Image 1 (spheres, helix red, strand yellow):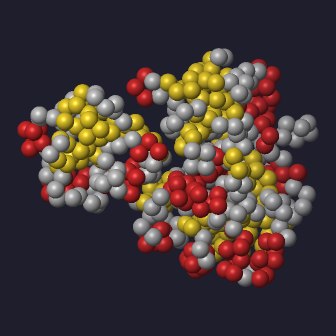
Image 2 (tube, helix red, strand yellow):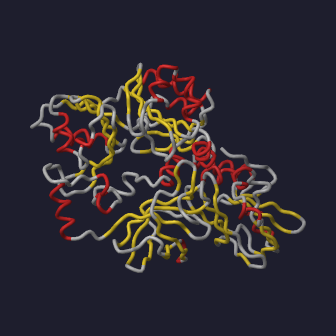
Length: 364
Length: 129
């Protein structure tokens, strides 16, 4: 038996198909993951993401510590509430996890990490905190819910109440605020409008039921994956992990190599750059019918690559994926993807994302 | 456990067979579609192909995985459910009805006897947990 979120019984009651994810028993779908996908693109969906772990970093050295710990530079956070996406690297410049950091006060940052690596991340934070005046406080007492989709605000409004709705209406994208008993952020993993919130675990069931009654569709991890992949977002453990550099994982934009700041992994990244990067991550769209799967080999003119994520895109009606290919392989190129039983299919390299705000962004 | 109609025969690999005057109709079971999740792609044999019992003859692909369909009987394919290529989700909603895969003409009636009946197939599902 895996860990259970405070909403476990809600999922079971709703007849969700439960699966292990990062050591947690989580809903894969509640009947049809394609219907759940469309609900998020066309209306609004509700996600239990309480398996993800919030970690508060407090103390006078919080900012200095995070500037050393993370590959992105929290000095970009100048407005209270602003969020920053980035990677946690080891000394070799490989990816321990990807995470979001929220700036709440000069002595208070909140980080949200993935479920699987959470314990290792926290141990890593602590092992590097000795030279800093910081406190590392994991928050297993908080549940995390996401509401995503074009009708997220309309449908969730009556559940959240006027004070929270007002705060949310003034929130800019990728910002968070504390309001009543909620930490609420205009972030997400779907490519749609919406928000994520952290709340005391004891309040999670009430909120969940309220959102469901308001007509927001519960969405499992199956649709969460097709939504994030259409939105061109990486998944830790698939598109990057401890064997690859963020610079070869489509994450160079999250790495701040500007002079004057040392961080864990910086020297290794500079060395990788000097030696020359060999791969990059691109989008892949299948030309015909079928589905792409992670692990499939992509034969490009410049050499072979591999699909790190692959799925059937419900919005496009096509197989899509992300692939790590030779760095010279150009977008627009048509490659052969090795399929089952020695067969091949044609697929085109693209620039992700594939879908944002319900609209296709790639030519089919 | 998925639905297991009493009038059908079943394979251990989760295909079903219905005997008719014209031959056999073949599909995948409710349990199989439920395990696989939303279907997105179906590859059917060509009409006129000779299929061999126990050999793969079709592919059903869901959001989760691709899976071979094994021929439950040997014989000649007389008709395929072309509508599934446009609406593979019918395999989820009606696996024993509109979600049939193909029809086979076969003289191989003995094999049908050796296939699982509904109670044996239910026992198999119970054993698989």
